[in-house]
Length: 268
Image (cartoon, rainbow, N blue to C red):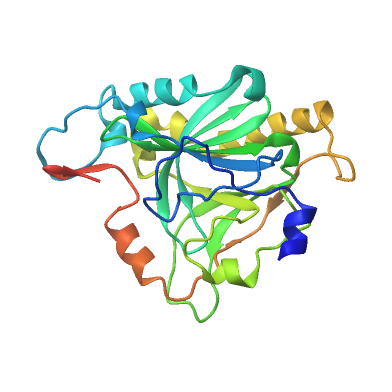
């Protein structure tokens, strides 16, 4: 495991202003070396604050008038123009982790990076940023989700998986650790609000994939990685999730716990 960390850039790096750990997605401190993917946890003081009106129905807060516009403005304001470059597009999608848990995400493509934001649509604040250097991305896979033959889980539909280190496979420990976040890939699927006409373009995974491929290829030309083949390989293949039981993901996905929603007087 130590040899792998020396050979490839570390996957996670936490901001020195990070708040204390509050869940499996919070990353630990890492070396400040240049990385292909970093994750930064932001302080709650960046929140705007706000109130949530009572609603007895299950409502995605990201689909409420004005909320999504404010969220997009907030995450775009966090883009470092010198480091990341210009913004090429913004999308609202669901990230699927290695244990099949869905998590609501805002995703931006810039000149140099793929930015994945964990945004709180209740308090209107960004909680975490993951940055992936585009010149490290080498594969983009499209396909339907599959599970091991003995798995009790299933997931309908399809998605896209983005790889940024083809030379490294997740370790055995990481595969079986539900809190592991050192995987050299990330997976997205459609957000449940994609059927709303006004949000269809923002949830379009196909357009996202095409824009990402173009931006990554340009980044490869501008900043080639020594010893690494340039270019992005686009694959049509099943997206495999190596999870077998996943009781927590089943309950969480059924109740949309990975999304900010209005549930009576509460928002999650």
